[in-house]
Length: 159
Image (cartoon, rainbow, N blue to C red; front, side):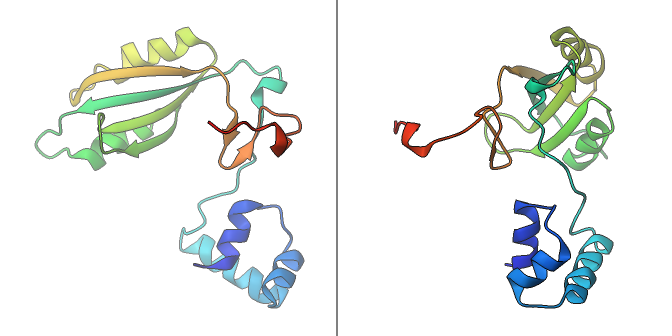
Protein backbone atom coordinates (compact mmCIF):
# COMPACT_ATOMS: atom_id res chain seq x y z
CA UNK A 1 0.00 0.00 0.00
CA UNK A 2 1.21 3.48 -0.81
CA UNK A 3 2.05 5.30 2.44
CA UNK A 4 1.55 8.72 0.80
CA UNK A 5 -2.05 7.87 -0.07
CA UNK A 6 -2.60 6.52 3.44
CA UNK A 7 -1.34 9.76 4.99
CA UNK A 8 -3.42 11.94 2.66
CA UNK A 9 -6.58 9.92 3.27
CA UNK A 10 -6.12 10.41 7.02
CA UNK A 11 -5.42 14.16 6.75
CA UNK A 12 -5.45 15.89 3.36
CA UNK A 13 -4.30 19.13 4.97
CA UNK A 14 -0.79 17.83 5.64
CA UNK A 15 1.73 20.01 3.84
CA UNK A 16 4.16 18.62 1.31
CA UNK A 17 6.91 19.34 3.86
CA UNK A 18 5.12 17.28 6.53
CA UNK A 19 4.48 14.45 4.08
CA UNK A 20 8.10 14.52 2.89
CA UNK A 21 9.37 14.32 6.48
CA UNK A 22 7.04 11.43 7.31
CA UNK A 23 8.09 9.50 4.21
CA UNK A 24 11.79 10.47 4.17
CA UNK A 25 11.54 11.82 0.62
CA UNK A 26 11.83 15.30 -0.87
CA UNK A 27 8.97 17.80 -1.08
CA UNK A 28 9.42 17.77 -4.84
CA UNK A 29 8.89 14.00 -4.92
CA UNK A 30 5.74 14.39 -2.80
CA UNK A 31 4.41 17.10 -5.15
CA UNK A 32 5.20 15.02 -8.23
CA UNK A 33 3.51 11.90 -6.82
CA UNK A 34 0.40 13.83 -5.78
CA UNK A 35 0.19 15.46 -9.21
CA UNK A 36 0.50 12.03 -10.81
CA UNK A 37 -2.25 10.59 -8.56
CA UNK A 38 -4.53 13.51 -9.42
CA UNK A 39 -3.84 13.19 -13.16
CA UNK A 40 -4.53 9.45 -13.09
CA UNK A 41 -7.72 10.06 -11.02
CA UNK A 42 -6.43 7.97 -8.12
CA UNK A 43 -7.01 11.04 -5.95
CA UNK A 44 -10.54 12.12 -6.83
CA UNK A 45 -10.74 15.21 -4.61
CA UNK A 46 -10.36 16.61 -1.13
CA UNK A 47 -13.22 17.15 1.29
CA UNK A 48 -13.67 18.40 4.83
CA UNK A 49 -15.73 16.37 7.31
CA UNK A 50 -18.25 18.82 8.79
CA UNK A 51 -20.53 18.37 11.80
CA UNK A 52 -23.57 19.99 10.16
CA UNK A 53 -25.52 19.76 13.44
CA UNK A 54 -23.33 22.61 14.75
CA UNK A 55 -24.28 24.90 11.87
CA UNK A 56 -27.48 26.65 10.81
CA UNK A 57 -27.69 24.73 7.53
CA UNK A 58 -31.03 23.10 6.80
CA UNK A 59 -29.96 19.55 6.18
CA UNK A 60 -31.29 16.02 6.27
CA UNK A 61 -29.45 12.93 5.16
CA UNK A 62 -30.97 9.60 4.15
CA UNK A 63 -29.76 6.16 3.15
CA UNK A 64 -31.87 4.72 0.36
CA UNK A 65 -31.70 1.10 -0.70
CA UNK A 66 -32.95 0.10 -4.12
CA UNK A 67 -33.88 -3.18 -5.67
CA UNK A 68 -33.45 -2.84 -9.41
CA UNK A 69 -33.96 -4.98 -12.46
CA UNK A 70 -31.48 -4.34 -15.24
CA UNK A 71 -33.09 -3.89 -18.63
CA UNK A 72 -31.75 -4.79 -22.07
CA UNK A 73 -28.82 -2.48 -22.72
CA UNK A 74 -29.02 -1.01 -19.21
CA UNK A 75 -27.12 -2.91 -16.53
CA UNK A 76 -26.17 -1.86 -13.01
CA UNK A 77 -23.45 0.52 -14.26
CA UNK A 78 -25.88 2.48 -16.43
CA UNK A 79 -28.55 2.57 -13.72
CA UNK A 80 -26.01 3.78 -11.14
CA UNK A 81 -24.80 6.41 -13.61
CA UNK A 82 -28.32 7.80 -14.08
CA UNK A 83 -28.93 7.91 -10.32
CA UNK A 84 -25.53 9.49 -9.59
CA UNK A 85 -26.38 12.48 -11.82
CA UNK A 86 -29.19 13.67 -9.51
CA UNK A 87 -28.01 16.67 -7.46
CA UNK A 88 -29.54 15.24 -4.28
CA UNK A 89 -27.41 12.07 -4.49
CA UNK A 90 -24.09 12.22 -2.63
CA UNK A 91 -22.98 8.57 -2.88
CA UNK A 92 -23.98 5.52 -4.92
CA UNK A 93 -22.86 1.95 -4.18
CA UNK A 94 -23.42 -1.39 -5.90
CA UNK A 95 -24.27 -3.79 -3.09
CA UNK A 96 -24.53 -7.45 -2.29
CA UNK A 97 -27.21 -8.65 0.09
CA UNK A 98 -30.77 -7.40 0.46
CA UNK A 99 -30.50 -4.51 -2.01
CA UNK A 100 -28.78 -3.92 -5.32
CA UNK A 101 -27.88 -0.23 -5.07
CA UNK A 102 -27.54 1.96 -1.97
CA UNK A 103 -27.47 5.76 -2.03
CA UNK A 104 -26.81 8.59 0.34
CA UNK A 105 -29.16 11.48 -0.39
CA UNK A 106 -29.26 15.00 1.05
CA UNK A 107 -32.14 17.46 1.19
CA UNK A 108 -33.28 20.47 3.19
CA UNK A 109 -36.16 18.61 4.86
CA UNK A 110 -37.48 15.07 5.33
CA UNK A 111 -40.25 15.97 2.88
CA UNK A 112 -37.72 17.06 0.23
CA UNK A 113 -36.02 13.67 0.39
CA UNK A 114 -39.35 11.81 0.40
CA UNK A 115 -40.49 13.77 -2.67
CA UNK A 116 -37.19 13.06 -4.42
CA UNK A 117 -37.71 9.34 -3.85
CA UNK A 118 -41.38 9.41 -4.86
CA UNK A 119 -41.13 11.65 -7.92
CA UNK A 120 -37.67 11.14 -9.35
CA UNK A 121 -36.17 7.88 -8.09
CA UNK A 122 -39.04 5.38 -7.75
CA UNK A 123 -40.47 6.10 -11.24
CA UNK A 124 -37.25 4.99 -12.98
CA UNK A 125 -38.05 1.93 -15.12
CA UNK A 126 -35.39 -0.28 -13.54
CA UNK A 127 -36.30 0.54 -9.92
CA UNK A 128 -38.47 -2.19 -8.42
CA UNK A 129 -38.56 -0.98 -4.80
CA UNK A 130 -37.04 1.58 -2.45
CA UNK A 131 -36.36 1.60 1.27
CA UNK A 132 -35.51 4.93 2.89
CA UNK A 133 -33.88 5.37 6.29
CA UNK A 134 -33.25 8.89 7.59
CA UNK A 135 -30.04 9.66 9.45
CA UNK A 136 -31.02 11.11 12.81
CA UNK A 137 -27.51 11.71 14.12
CA UNK A 138 -24.02 10.99 12.84
CA UNK A 139 -21.51 9.74 15.39
CA UNK A 140 -18.59 8.85 13.15
CA UNK A 141 -17.94 9.64 9.50
CA UNK A 142 -15.00 8.44 7.42
CA UNK A 143 -13.18 7.41 10.59
CA UNK A 144 -13.71 10.74 12.37
CA UNK A 145 -15.89 11.20 15.46
CA UNK A 146 -18.28 14.06 14.71
CA UNK A 147 -20.92 14.06 17.45
CA UNK A 148 -18.63 13.86 20.43
CA UNK A 149 -16.91 17.09 21.52
CA UNK A 150 -14.23 15.17 23.38
CA UNK A 151 -14.15 11.42 23.26
CA UNK A 152 -12.43 9.82 26.23
CA UNK A 153 -11.82 6.15 25.46
CA UNK A 154 -12.49 5.32 29.12
CA UNK A 155 -16.09 6.39 28.48
CA UNK A 156 -16.60 3.84 25.73
CA UNK A 157 -18.51 0.84 26.95
CA UNK A 158 -17.93 -2.52 25.33
CA UNK A 159 -20.99 -4.35 24.13
